[in-house]
Length: 572
Image (cartoon, rainbow, N blue to C red; front, side):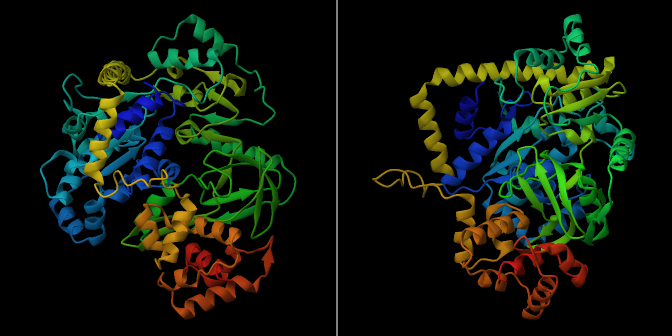
Protein backbone atom coordinates (compact mmCIF):
# COMPACT_ATOMS: atom_id res chain seq x y z
CA UNK A 1 0.00 0.00 0.00
CA UNK A 2 1.25 3.48 -0.82
CA UNK A 3 1.31 6.38 1.61
CA UNK A 4 -1.40 8.14 -0.40
CA UNK A 5 -3.68 5.10 -0.21
CA UNK A 6 -3.20 4.82 3.55
CA UNK A 7 -4.02 8.50 3.93
CA UNK A 8 -7.20 8.04 1.88
CA UNK A 9 -8.32 5.23 4.21
CA UNK A 10 -7.61 7.31 7.31
CA UNK A 11 -9.61 10.23 5.93
CA UNK A 12 -12.63 7.95 5.53
CA UNK A 13 -12.71 7.51 9.32
CA UNK A 14 -11.59 3.90 9.63
CA UNK A 15 -9.74 2.79 12.72
CA UNK A 16 -6.40 1.70 11.31
CA UNK A 17 -3.26 -0.25 12.09
CA UNK A 18 -0.55 1.51 10.08
CA UNK A 19 2.50 -0.70 9.66
CA UNK A 20 5.39 -1.49 7.38
CA UNK A 21 9.18 -1.90 7.43
CA UNK A 22 11.50 0.62 9.07
CA UNK A 23 11.79 3.63 6.77
CA UNK A 24 8.50 3.05 4.93
CA UNK A 25 7.10 6.39 6.07
CA UNK A 26 4.71 5.50 8.87
CA UNK A 27 5.42 8.65 10.90
CA UNK A 28 5.18 10.73 7.72
CA UNK A 29 1.65 9.45 7.07
CA UNK A 30 0.65 10.09 10.67
CA UNK A 31 1.90 13.66 10.48
CA UNK A 32 0.04 14.21 7.20
CA UNK A 33 -3.21 12.96 8.73
CA UNK A 34 -2.71 15.09 11.85
CA UNK A 35 -2.05 18.09 9.60
CA UNK A 36 -5.25 17.32 7.63
CA UNK A 37 -7.36 17.14 10.80
CA UNK A 38 -5.94 20.39 12.14
CA UNK A 39 -6.65 22.14 8.85
CA UNK A 40 -10.31 21.43 9.67
CA UNK A 41 -10.06 22.48 13.34
CA UNK A 42 -10.02 18.91 14.64
CA UNK A 43 -7.41 18.35 17.34
CA UNK A 44 -6.56 14.64 17.63
CA UNK A 45 -5.18 12.98 20.72
CA UNK A 46 -1.54 12.47 19.72
CA UNK A 47 0.21 9.83 21.78
CA UNK A 48 2.86 7.13 21.70
CA UNK A 49 3.95 4.23 23.87
CA UNK A 50 7.17 6.02 24.92
CA UNK A 51 8.18 9.60 25.58
CA UNK A 52 10.79 9.47 22.83
CA UNK A 53 8.29 8.31 20.23
CA UNK A 54 5.74 10.88 21.45
CA UNK A 55 8.27 13.68 20.96
CA UNK A 56 8.52 12.80 17.26
CA UNK A 57 4.86 13.82 16.91
CA UNK A 58 4.91 16.61 19.51
CA UNK A 59 2.49 14.55 21.59
CA UNK A 60 2.49 12.81 24.95
CA UNK A 61 2.64 9.23 26.15
CA UNK A 62 -0.59 7.25 25.98
CA UNK A 63 -0.15 6.57 29.70
CA UNK A 64 -0.29 10.31 30.47
CA UNK A 65 -3.01 11.13 27.94
CA UNK A 66 -5.40 8.43 29.13
CA UNK A 67 -4.74 8.80 32.86
CA UNK A 68 -3.36 5.25 33.09
CA UNK A 69 -0.03 6.57 34.33
CA UNK A 70 2.39 4.01 35.73
CA UNK A 71 -0.35 1.56 36.68
CA UNK A 72 -0.07 -1.96 35.32
CA UNK A 73 -3.81 -2.58 35.70
CA UNK A 74 -6.89 -0.57 36.67
CA UNK A 75 -8.91 -1.25 39.82
CA UNK A 76 -12.31 0.09 40.91
CA UNK A 77 -10.44 2.48 43.21
CA UNK A 78 -8.40 3.74 40.24
CA UNK A 79 -11.55 4.58 38.28
CA UNK A 80 -12.97 6.44 41.27
CA UNK A 81 -9.78 8.48 41.58
CA UNK A 82 -9.55 9.23 37.85
CA UNK A 83 -13.19 10.28 37.74
CA UNK A 84 -12.28 13.23 39.98
CA UNK A 85 -9.84 14.61 37.39
CA UNK A 86 -11.52 17.47 35.45
CA UNK A 87 -8.74 17.61 32.86
CA UNK A 88 -9.43 13.99 31.87
CA UNK A 89 -13.14 14.71 31.39
CA UNK A 90 -12.23 17.69 29.22
CA UNK A 91 -9.67 15.69 27.24
CA UNK A 92 -12.00 12.78 26.48
CA UNK A 93 -14.97 15.06 25.79
CA UNK A 94 -13.02 16.78 23.03
CA UNK A 95 -11.44 13.62 21.64
CA UNK A 96 -12.68 12.28 18.33
CA UNK A 97 -9.49 10.76 16.94
CA UNK A 98 -6.80 8.98 18.99
CA UNK A 99 -3.33 8.25 17.58
CA UNK A 100 -1.01 5.77 19.33
CA UNK A 101 2.45 5.53 17.76
CA UNK A 102 5.04 2.77 18.39
CA UNK A 103 2.25 0.39 19.32
CA UNK A 104 4.72 -2.52 19.29
CA UNK A 105 6.18 -1.24 22.57
CA UNK A 106 2.81 -1.09 24.37
CA UNK A 107 1.72 -4.19 26.29
CA UNK A 108 -1.60 -5.77 25.33
CA UNK A 109 -2.85 -5.31 28.90
CA UNK A 110 -2.13 -1.57 28.71
CA UNK A 111 -4.05 -1.30 25.44
CA UNK A 112 -7.05 -2.98 27.10
CA UNK A 113 -6.86 -0.48 29.97
CA UNK A 114 -6.77 2.50 27.59
CA UNK A 115 -9.81 1.18 25.70
CA UNK A 116 -11.64 0.72 28.99
CA UNK A 117 -10.83 4.31 29.98
CA UNK A 118 -12.16 5.58 26.64
CA UNK A 119 -15.51 3.86 27.26
CA UNK A 120 -15.56 5.00 30.89
CA UNK A 121 -15.04 8.70 30.16
CA UNK A 122 -17.21 8.69 27.04
CA UNK A 123 -19.97 6.99 29.08
CA UNK A 124 -20.75 4.48 26.36
CA UNK A 125 -20.42 0.76 25.74
CA UNK A 126 -19.26 1.41 22.19
CA UNK A 127 -15.72 0.04 21.65
CA UNK A 128 -13.09 2.70 22.26
CA UNK A 129 -15.85 5.12 23.20
CA UNK A 130 -16.64 5.66 19.53
CA UNK A 131 -13.23 7.15 18.73
CA UNK A 132 -11.39 6.66 15.47
CA UNK A 133 -8.22 4.94 16.67
CA UNK A 134 -5.00 4.98 14.66
CA UNK A 135 -2.36 2.50 15.82
CA UNK A 136 1.06 2.74 14.23
CA UNK A 137 4.13 0.54 14.53
CA UNK A 138 6.06 -2.49 13.40
CA UNK A 139 5.90 -5.72 15.41
CA UNK A 140 9.31 -6.75 14.09
CA UNK A 141 10.63 -4.30 16.65
CA UNK A 142 11.60 -5.68 20.06
CA UNK A 143 8.61 -6.64 22.24
CA UNK A 144 7.49 -4.72 25.32
CA UNK A 145 9.11 -5.74 28.57
CA UNK A 146 6.87 -7.65 30.99
CA UNK A 147 8.17 -7.78 34.53
CA UNK A 148 8.38 -11.22 36.13
CA UNK A 149 6.15 -10.18 39.00
CA UNK A 150 3.40 -9.33 36.50
CA UNK A 151 3.69 -12.78 34.96
CA UNK A 152 3.41 -14.32 38.42
CA UNK A 153 0.46 -12.16 39.46
CA UNK A 154 -1.45 -12.53 36.19
CA UNK A 155 -0.49 -15.91 34.67
CA UNK A 156 -3.77 -16.08 32.78
CA UNK A 157 -2.66 -13.14 30.64
CA UNK A 158 -0.02 -15.37 29.10
CA UNK A 159 -2.15 -18.43 28.51
CA UNK A 160 -4.64 -18.60 25.68
CA UNK A 161 -4.87 -14.83 25.17
CA UNK A 162 -5.75 -15.22 21.57
CA UNK A 163 -7.15 -18.10 19.57
CA UNK A 164 -4.31 -19.93 17.92
CA UNK A 165 -1.68 -18.28 20.09
CA UNK A 166 -1.56 -20.14 23.38
CA UNK A 167 0.99 -19.04 25.99
CA UNK A 168 2.59 -16.32 23.85
CA UNK A 169 6.07 -15.27 24.84
CA UNK A 170 5.42 -11.72 23.71
CA UNK A 171 2.94 -9.21 25.09
CA UNK A 172 2.36 -7.45 21.76
CA UNK A 173 -0.73 -5.28 21.48
CA UNK A 174 -2.47 -7.51 18.93
CA UNK A 175 -3.13 -9.96 21.79
CA UNK A 176 -5.41 -7.39 23.44
CA UNK A 177 -9.18 -7.72 23.52
CA UNK A 178 -9.24 -4.04 22.58
CA UNK A 179 -7.49 -4.89 19.29
CA UNK A 180 -10.27 -7.32 18.38
CA UNK A 181 -12.92 -4.78 19.36
CA UNK A 182 -11.58 -2.13 17.01
CA UNK A 183 -10.94 -4.63 14.18
CA UNK A 184 -8.55 -2.19 12.49
CA UNK A 185 -8.17 -1.76 8.77
CA UNK A 186 -4.61 -2.86 8.00
CA UNK A 187 -2.54 -0.34 6.07
CA UNK A 188 0.78 -2.03 5.28
CA UNK A 189 3.18 0.45 3.64
CA UNK A 190 5.49 -1.24 1.16
CA UNK A 191 7.53 1.69 -0.17
CA UNK A 192 10.99 2.52 1.19
CA UNK A 193 12.14 6.02 2.12
CA UNK A 194 15.13 5.41 4.40
CA UNK A 195 17.59 2.73 3.37
CA UNK A 196 19.42 3.31 0.11
CA UNK A 197 20.31 0.58 -2.36
CA UNK A 198 18.49 -2.54 -3.50
CA UNK A 199 21.11 -4.83 -1.95
CA UNK A 200 20.49 -3.58 1.59
CA UNK A 201 16.72 -3.74 1.13
CA UNK A 202 17.07 -7.35 0.00
CA UNK A 203 18.92 -8.20 3.22
CA UNK A 204 16.41 -6.48 5.49
CA UNK A 205 13.40 -7.94 3.70
CA UNK A 206 14.91 -11.44 3.83
CA UNK A 207 15.31 -11.19 7.62
CA UNK A 208 11.81 -9.77 7.89
CA UNK A 209 10.34 -12.68 5.90
CA UNK A 210 12.32 -15.26 7.85
CA UNK A 211 14.08 -16.35 4.65
CA UNK A 212 17.75 -15.77 5.43
CA UNK A 213 19.54 -18.04 3.00
CA UNK A 214 23.24 -18.60 2.42
CA UNK A 215 23.45 -15.73 -0.04
CA UNK A 216 22.12 -13.21 2.52
CA UNK A 217 24.48 -14.53 5.21
CA UNK A 218 27.36 -14.13 2.78
CA UNK A 219 26.46 -10.49 2.07
CA UNK A 220 26.41 -9.73 5.80
CA UNK A 221 29.63 -11.64 6.41
CA UNK A 222 31.30 -9.42 3.83
CA UNK A 223 30.55 -6.43 6.04
CA UNK A 224 32.40 -7.92 9.04
CA UNK A 225 35.20 -5.57 10.02
CA UNK A 226 34.80 -3.41 6.94
CA UNK A 227 34.64 0.30 7.87
CA UNK A 228 31.65 2.39 6.92
CA UNK A 229 32.26 4.27 3.68
CA UNK A 230 30.95 7.56 5.06
CA UNK A 231 33.23 10.26 6.46
CA UNK A 232 31.35 10.43 9.77
CA UNK A 233 32.53 8.25 12.65
CA UNK A 234 29.87 5.58 13.21
CA UNK A 235 27.94 4.96 16.41
CA UNK A 236 28.41 1.46 17.81
CA UNK A 237 25.36 -0.63 18.64
CA UNK A 238 25.66 -3.38 21.24
CA UNK A 239 23.17 -5.83 22.66
CA UNK A 240 24.23 -5.33 26.31
CA UNK A 241 24.46 -2.21 28.49
CA UNK A 242 27.83 -3.22 29.92
CA UNK A 243 29.47 -3.04 26.49
CA UNK A 244 27.95 0.37 25.83
CA UNK A 245 29.12 1.87 29.13
CA UNK A 246 32.63 0.47 28.70
CA UNK A 247 32.93 1.73 25.13
CA UNK A 248 31.70 5.24 25.91
CA UNK A 249 33.95 5.65 28.94
CA UNK A 250 36.98 4.27 27.10
CA UNK A 251 36.56 6.66 24.18
CA UNK A 252 35.94 9.61 26.47
CA UNK A 253 39.10 8.85 28.47
CA UNK A 254 41.20 8.90 25.28
CA UNK A 255 40.35 12.53 24.63
CA UNK A 256 42.65 15.16 26.10
CA UNK A 257 41.38 17.93 28.31
CA UNK A 258 39.02 18.46 31.24
CA UNK A 259 35.90 16.43 31.91
CA UNK A 260 32.78 18.51 32.51
CA UNK A 261 29.91 16.90 34.40
CA UNK A 262 26.26 17.92 34.17
CA UNK A 263 23.86 16.36 36.64
CA UNK A 264 20.19 15.75 35.97
CA UNK A 265 17.85 17.61 38.29
CA UNK A 266 14.46 16.35 39.39
CA UNK A 267 11.52 17.65 41.33
CA UNK A 268 8.05 16.39 42.17
CA UNK A 269 6.86 12.96 43.26
CA UNK A 270 9.78 10.58 43.53
CA UNK A 271 8.02 7.63 41.87
CA UNK A 272 6.99 9.76 38.88
CA UNK A 273 10.44 11.31 38.59
CA UNK A 274 11.92 7.80 38.56
CA UNK A 275 9.57 6.88 35.72
CA UNK A 276 10.72 9.92 33.72
CA UNK A 277 14.37 9.08 34.30
CA UNK A 278 13.79 5.51 33.11
CA UNK A 279 12.11 6.58 29.88
CA UNK A 280 14.58 9.39 29.13
CA UNK A 281 17.68 8.63 27.05
CA UNK A 282 19.65 11.47 28.61
CA UNK A 283 21.91 10.15 31.42
CA UNK A 284 21.54 11.23 35.03
CA UNK A 285 25.19 12.29 34.95
CA UNK A 286 26.37 13.59 31.59
CA UNK A 287 30.20 13.50 31.32
CA UNK A 288 31.74 15.31 28.36
CA UNK A 289 35.02 16.61 26.96
CA UNK A 290 35.70 18.91 24.08
CA UNK A 291 35.79 16.75 20.94
CA UNK A 292 33.44 14.10 22.33
CA UNK A 293 31.01 12.47 19.94
CA UNK A 294 27.43 12.97 21.10
CA UNK A 295 23.88 12.26 20.04
CA UNK A 296 20.82 14.43 20.64
CA UNK A 297 18.08 12.49 22.42
CA UNK A 298 15.13 14.80 21.94
CA UNK A 299 13.47 16.56 19.02
CA UNK A 300 13.77 20.32 18.67
CA UNK A 301 13.00 21.18 15.08
CA UNK A 302 13.30 24.92 15.71
CA UNK A 303 16.88 24.56 16.94
CA UNK A 304 17.79 22.12 14.17
CA UNK A 305 18.12 18.72 15.82
CA UNK A 306 16.09 15.56 16.31
CA UNK A 307 16.44 12.37 18.29
CA UNK A 308 19.45 10.61 16.74
CA UNK A 309 21.25 13.71 15.36
CA UNK A 310 25.01 13.19 15.72
CA UNK A 311 27.63 15.81 16.42
CA UNK A 312 30.93 16.74 18.07
CA UNK A 313 31.26 18.84 21.22
CA UNK A 314 32.93 22.05 20.06
CA UNK A 315 32.86 24.13 23.24
CA UNK A 316 32.30 23.42 26.92
CA UNK A 317 31.97 25.49 30.05
CA UNK A 318 30.26 25.03 33.39
CA UNK A 319 27.08 26.48 31.94
CA UNK A 320 27.25 25.97 28.20
CA UNK A 321 27.63 23.19 25.61
CA UNK A 322 28.10 23.88 21.92
CA UNK A 323 27.74 20.98 19.48
CA UNK A 324 28.55 21.00 15.77
CA UNK A 325 26.32 18.52 13.97
CA UNK A 326 27.34 16.33 11.05
CA UNK A 327 25.64 18.83 8.73
CA UNK A 328 28.03 21.54 10.00
CA UNK A 329 25.52 23.48 12.10
CA UNK A 330 26.76 24.80 15.45
CA UNK A 331 24.09 24.52 18.16
CA UNK A 332 24.29 26.09 21.59
CA UNK A 333 22.54 23.40 23.61
CA UNK A 334 20.31 24.33 26.50
CA UNK A 335 18.82 22.03 29.15
CA UNK A 336 15.61 20.28 28.15
CA UNK A 337 12.82 19.20 30.44
CA UNK A 338 10.69 16.08 30.59
CA UNK A 339 7.54 16.50 32.65
CA UNK A 340 4.43 14.73 33.88
CA UNK A 341 1.62 17.19 34.43
CA UNK A 342 -2.02 17.00 35.34
CA UNK A 343 -4.47 19.82 34.65
CA UNK A 344 -1.60 22.17 33.96
CA UNK A 345 0.20 21.34 37.21
CA UNK A 346 3.62 19.72 37.10
CA UNK A 347 3.63 16.50 39.12
CA UNK A 348 7.21 15.59 38.23
CA UNK A 349 9.95 17.12 36.16
CA UNK A 350 13.50 16.21 35.20
CA UNK A 351 15.96 18.47 33.43
CA UNK A 352 19.15 17.63 31.60
CA UNK A 353 21.01 18.59 28.46
CA UNK A 354 19.40 16.47 25.69
CA UNK A 355 22.66 14.69 24.86
CA UNK A 356 24.42 11.42 25.46
CA UNK A 357 27.79 10.06 24.39
CA UNK A 358 27.37 8.51 20.98
CA UNK A 359 30.33 6.18 20.68
CA UNK A 360 27.94 3.37 21.59
CA UNK A 361 24.27 2.71 22.37
CA UNK A 362 22.20 -0.41 23.00
CA UNK A 363 20.02 -1.92 20.28
CA UNK A 364 16.98 -1.49 22.52
CA UNK A 365 17.57 2.24 22.88
CA UNK A 366 18.22 2.68 19.18
CA UNK A 367 14.59 1.91 18.32
CA UNK A 368 13.04 4.86 16.54
CA UNK A 369 16.38 6.28 15.40
CA UNK A 370 17.84 6.67 11.92
CA UNK A 371 21.64 6.63 11.86
CA UNK A 372 23.93 7.73 9.08
CA UNK A 373 26.64 5.29 10.14
CA UNK A 374 26.85 2.48 12.71
CA UNK A 375 29.20 -0.26 13.87
CA UNK A 376 26.99 -3.09 15.05
CA UNK A 377 28.02 -6.02 17.22
CA UNK A 378 25.37 -8.74 17.10
CA UNK A 379 27.62 -11.55 18.31
CA UNK A 380 25.70 -11.71 21.62
CA UNK A 381 22.17 -11.29 20.29
CA UNK A 382 19.80 -12.96 22.72
CA UNK A 383 16.33 -12.17 21.40
CA UNK A 384 14.56 -12.63 18.04
CA UNK A 385 14.18 -9.33 16.23
CA UNK A 386 17.32 -7.79 17.71
CA UNK A 387 19.35 -8.05 14.50
CA UNK A 388 16.56 -6.65 12.34
CA UNK A 389 16.08 -3.66 14.64
CA UNK A 390 19.81 -2.90 14.70
CA UNK A 391 20.41 -3.25 10.97
CA UNK A 392 17.33 -1.26 10.02
CA UNK A 393 18.57 1.75 12.03
CA UNK A 394 21.19 2.41 9.34
CA UNK A 395 20.22 4.40 6.27
CA UNK A 396 22.38 2.47 3.80
CA UNK A 397 24.77 -0.44 3.48
CA UNK A 398 27.61 2.06 3.02
CA UNK A 399 26.99 3.28 6.56
CA UNK A 400 27.22 -0.22 8.09
CA UNK A 401 30.21 -1.89 9.72
CA UNK A 402 29.40 -5.27 11.26
CA UNK A 403 31.59 -6.24 14.20
CA UNK A 404 30.03 -9.62 14.85
CA UNK A 405 26.88 -11.65 14.31
CA UNK A 406 25.26 -14.88 15.55
CA UNK A 407 22.35 -16.97 14.31
CA UNK A 408 19.89 -15.38 16.77
CA UNK A 409 20.52 -11.99 15.16
CA UNK A 410 19.00 -13.25 11.90
CA UNK A 411 15.84 -14.57 13.53
CA UNK A 412 12.49 -12.90 14.09
CA UNK A 413 9.64 -14.05 16.31
CA UNK A 414 7.78 -16.91 14.60
CA UNK A 415 4.56 -15.53 16.04
CA UNK A 416 5.22 -12.08 14.59
CA UNK A 417 6.25 -13.55 11.25
CA UNK A 418 2.89 -15.29 10.91
CA UNK A 419 0.95 -12.22 11.99
CA UNK A 420 2.90 -10.01 9.59
CA UNK A 421 1.92 -12.24 6.67
CA UNK A 422 -1.70 -11.91 7.74
CA UNK A 423 -1.33 -8.14 7.97
CA UNK A 424 0.22 -7.92 4.48
CA UNK A 425 -2.57 -10.03 2.96
CA UNK A 426 -5.26 -7.98 4.72
CA UNK A 427 -3.67 -4.78 3.43
CA UNK A 428 -3.68 -6.09 -0.14
CA UNK A 429 -7.42 -6.76 0.17
CA UNK A 430 -7.93 -3.20 1.43
CA UNK A 431 -6.03 -1.78 -1.55
CA UNK A 432 -8.26 -3.75 -3.94
CA UNK A 433 -11.35 -2.53 -2.10
CA UNK A 434 -10.14 1.08 -2.14
CA UNK A 435 -9.37 1.02 -5.85
CA UNK A 436 -12.66 -0.71 -6.55
CA UNK A 437 -14.63 2.13 -4.95
CA UNK A 438 -13.23 4.73 -7.32
CA UNK A 439 -11.96 8.22 -6.54
CA UNK A 440 -15.40 9.87 -6.51
CA UNK A 441 -16.88 7.49 -3.93
CA UNK A 442 -13.75 7.64 -1.76
CA UNK A 443 -13.88 11.45 -1.78
CA UNK A 444 -17.57 11.42 -0.88
CA UNK A 445 -16.95 9.12 2.08
CA UNK A 446 -14.12 11.34 3.25
CA UNK A 447 -16.37 14.41 3.10
CA UNK A 448 -19.10 12.53 4.96
CA UNK A 449 -16.73 11.56 7.77
CA UNK A 450 -15.24 15.04 7.97
CA UNK A 451 -18.75 16.49 8.24
CA UNK A 452 -19.48 14.17 11.19
CA UNK A 453 -16.30 15.24 12.92
CA UNK A 454 -16.51 18.97 12.25
CA UNK A 455 -19.79 19.99 10.58
CA UNK A 456 -19.09 23.70 11.07
CA UNK A 457 -15.81 23.63 9.16
CA UNK A 458 -16.70 21.46 6.19
CA UNK A 459 -17.12 23.32 2.93
CA UNK A 460 -16.15 26.71 4.34
CA UNK A 461 -13.44 27.53 1.85
CA UNK A 462 -13.45 31.09 0.58
CA UNK A 463 -14.39 31.84 -3.00
CA UNK A 464 -10.79 32.78 -3.65
CA UNK A 465 -9.62 29.34 -2.60
CA UNK A 466 -8.29 27.59 0.46
CA UNK A 467 -7.42 29.67 3.51
CA UNK A 468 -3.62 29.53 3.98
CA UNK A 469 -2.54 27.17 6.74
CA UNK A 470 -0.79 28.81 9.67
CA UNK A 471 2.59 27.47 10.70
CA UNK A 472 2.85 25.79 14.09
CA UNK A 473 4.66 28.85 15.48
CA UNK A 474 2.01 31.23 14.11
CA UNK A 475 -0.71 29.12 15.76
CA UNK A 476 1.08 29.46 19.11
CA UNK A 477 1.49 33.21 18.58
CA UNK A 478 -2.25 33.63 18.01
CA UNK A 479 -3.05 31.80 21.25
CA UNK A 480 -0.60 34.05 23.13
CA UNK A 481 -2.30 37.11 21.65
CA UNK A 482 -5.65 35.71 22.83
CA UNK A 483 -4.31 35.92 26.38
CA UNK A 484 -3.74 32.23 27.11
CA UNK A 485 -1.02 30.94 29.43
CA UNK A 486 1.66 28.37 28.66
CA UNK A 487 -0.24 25.41 30.14
CA UNK A 488 -3.46 26.45 28.43
CA UNK A 489 -1.71 26.63 25.07
CA UNK A 490 0.05 23.30 25.64
CA UNK A 491 -3.29 21.63 26.48
CA UNK A 492 -5.08 23.23 23.54
CA UNK A 493 -2.39 22.08 21.11
CA UNK A 494 -1.72 18.67 22.75
CA UNK A 495 1.95 19.60 23.10
CA UNK A 496 4.43 19.75 25.94
CA UNK A 497 5.01 23.11 27.64
CA UNK A 498 8.66 22.90 26.58
CA UNK A 499 7.61 22.74 22.91
CA UNK A 500 5.45 25.85 23.34
CA UNK A 501 8.42 27.63 24.93
CA UNK A 502 10.52 26.61 21.91
CA UNK A 503 7.90 28.35 19.76
CA UNK A 504 8.02 31.43 22.00
CA UNK A 505 11.78 31.68 21.67
CA UNK A 506 11.45 31.43 17.89
CA UNK A 507 8.83 34.20 17.97
CA UNK A 508 11.24 36.38 19.95
CA UNK A 509 13.99 35.76 17.37
CA UNK A 510 11.62 36.81 14.58
CA UNK A 511 10.09 39.72 16.51
CA UNK A 512 12.30 40.94 19.39
CA UNK A 513 9.62 43.50 20.38
CA UNK A 514 6.85 40.94 20.86
CA UNK A 515 5.24 41.46 24.28
CA UNK A 516 5.38 38.24 26.34
CA UNK A 517 4.32 39.93 29.61
CA UNK A 518 0.63 38.88 29.36
CA UNK A 519 1.76 35.29 28.72
CA UNK A 520 3.90 35.34 31.88
CA UNK A 521 1.12 36.99 33.90
CA UNK A 522 -1.38 34.31 32.83
CA UNK A 523 0.98 31.47 33.65
CA UNK A 524 0.62 31.71 37.43
CA UNK A 525 4.05 33.09 38.39
CA UNK A 526 3.85 35.72 41.12
CA UNK A 527 5.50 39.11 40.60
CA UNK A 528 8.03 38.36 43.33
CA UNK A 529 8.94 35.03 41.67
CA UNK A 530 9.37 36.77 38.32
CA UNK A 531 11.68 39.33 39.88
CA UNK A 532 13.71 36.64 41.62
CA UNK A 533 14.15 34.69 38.37
CA UNK A 534 15.06 37.87 36.49
CA UNK A 535 17.81 38.71 39.02
CA UNK A 536 19.20 35.16 38.82
CA UNK A 537 19.28 35.26 35.00
CA UNK A 538 21.02 38.63 34.75
CA UNK A 539 23.52 37.98 37.56
CA UNK A 540 25.95 36.07 35.30
CA UNK A 541 25.55 38.21 32.21
CA UNK A 542 25.00 37.00 28.66
CA UNK A 543 26.78 34.53 26.38
CA UNK A 544 26.10 34.40 22.64
CA UNK A 545 23.25 36.86 23.12
CA UNK A 546 21.39 34.78 25.73
CA UNK A 547 21.09 34.67 29.50
CA UNK A 548 22.08 31.15 30.56
CA UNK A 549 19.58 28.86 32.25
CA UNK A 550 21.84 26.54 34.26
CA UNK A 551 23.59 29.18 36.41
CA UNK A 552 20.21 30.80 37.08
CA UNK A 553 18.79 27.46 38.18
CA UNK A 554 21.75 26.90 40.51
CA UNK A 555 21.12 30.29 42.14
CA UNK A 556 17.37 29.69 42.44
CA UNK A 557 17.47 26.07 43.57
CA UNK A 558 15.02 23.27 42.77
CA UNK A 559 12.00 25.39 43.71
CA UNK A 560 11.92 26.77 40.17
CA UNK A 561 11.71 24.77 36.96
CA UNK A 562 13.68 25.38 33.77
CA UNK A 563 10.39 26.13 32.01
CA UNK A 564 9.64 28.92 34.50
CA UNK A 565 13.12 30.37 33.99
CA UNK A 566 12.76 30.18 30.20
CA UNK A 567 9.38 31.89 30.47
CA UNK A 568 10.72 34.89 32.41
CA UNK A 569 13.74 35.12 30.10
CA UNK A 570 11.38 35.90 27.22
CA UNK A 571 10.51 39.28 28.74
CA UNK A 572 14.10 40.41 29.40
